[in-house]
Image (tube, rainbow, N blue to C red; front, side):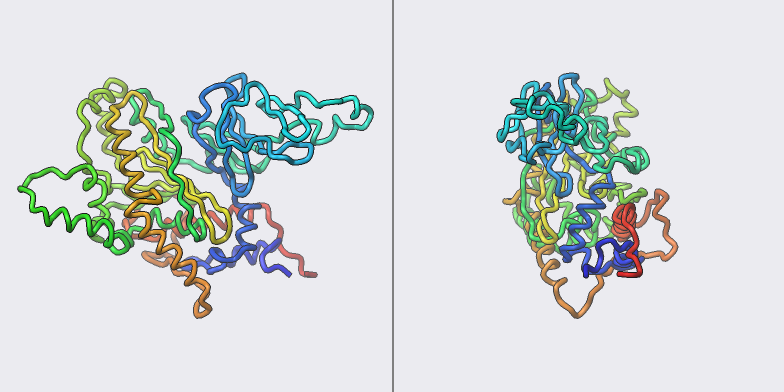
Length: 446
């Protein structure tokens, strides 16, 4: 008998106010339930519309464990379709990106479909006459996901046909996307090249939690950022020498606890939240000449300064992406198994902004998130140590109790001390909500 499948109470019991059971990270059955329930009921990031700019352009990815295609239809709209022929189940597209023209054609039996998924043609279609084919699922063509939303260029989908609306799911958290897009004088972003891809032998939630874990940088990154700062100091540069761009990026990772306490954390309902309410590791980057002037033409100087003064650090959009507005970056944490996660780190170009901003973003991505980075490996080692350590039978619970309040409310926006673990608790509150939304209680007879 399985322990959790079909048992809402058993799944909910994995999360207590101040701690979570280790099975949420290591149990393959819990992972399968996440794919079936959590990633179906929540709104999941698919891609950016700049990845499919022309009619017929497509981009393939995974939503949970479901292969999907983001495609630009002939009417200019973006559709998200399951990457599966309705005949024998063959994957229609295996390339990551491309242009399919006006239709998809299955490589197995040559069934073809319009780019909105509608059935276009079947060879020897007369063989289906008087069989009732038109009333079958296959007769209606490719299957679309339950719902799709293009929010300022960011494509999200909900696999479930019915469920929480996009607006209710994200609420005020969309302000972080707004800030990133508003940094473009043209109010538009473009994905700048392919992502950096990095495999991790750990559970996907470890990476998500780490985005708002502010008690680890000065410890885990002492070996990388701390070494870089020490070497810079040993150069004994004249007082007032400006930090080179690479040092501007990496030095703040060694900031003391007080820096992170004072920066603040904001939480929103449904598992979303961000660090860097008052300031962040991105606050003191050198100003790019001419950028404020360009942005002021779009917004006016007062609003332009307010946009650039909003230096949110990491915004987590539950369940599995993080964005950085000040550095125009998005990371998606793609679960592959209970102990295997693929991370894709994208950078964005601010259309009509100085190209120096894109160059700085690319440098940040290489230094912090690449498989060859000097910072990302610190985190990777911690995740993999945790994945291995959780196999130990001495304890079954993981503590997330820092600045815990038994009466804390996850249904209201809140701003707190920057080292609180409330955002982690917020994520697990949402985890239970969307895991159990359509899950029945186990019958007593079982």
